[in-house]
Length: 118
Length: 115
Image (cartoon, rainbow over all chains, first blue to last red; front, side, top):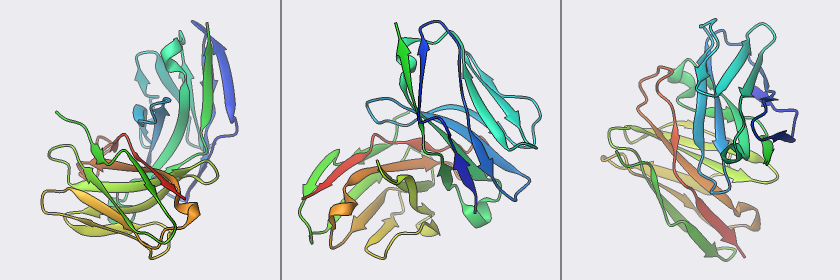
């Protein structure tokens, strides 16, 4: 079974600064997908960024980028030019490549609560 | 395109009762997954339905069940409610095409409180 670990329960950053959230995972699979979701106080889960394990290039979405280290099973999220609206709980999630056995099931980490200070 | 909708948004029940939650996926999405979110256990996968069939199931007791209709709408049912069932129940839909673009999009959740 796959596991996802987020070792930072809370992080804070000054507005306009950069912050990195950590995520490690454990799997015996060679192909899989990784995601970062954001959950603001409204509780709506919002996709931030996704990464295919077979791609060496790190995914980027505007101010959000990842550092994917497959050998180390590490998947960190970097938020540049932090904004007040980035304050939320961030979840790292894993999905198996083989939908035939695992379907679309996501395995989530414990979450990191990000505070953005003005 | 309308997002994933869940009804009701808030629900209060008492122990021993049963409850049914509803989820309408994004138009064209064929897979619906359910997750339970609690402060103690975090986000846990309940089950996934695809084309009216349960494709995957998490480690929850049989009191938790679900179904999917031909229009892809899904319901989950919890019978004989316990205090520990108090949680935010999230529904997510996806195309179920198997690619990375087959991303799960979440609804706003149903907050269930069991008294």
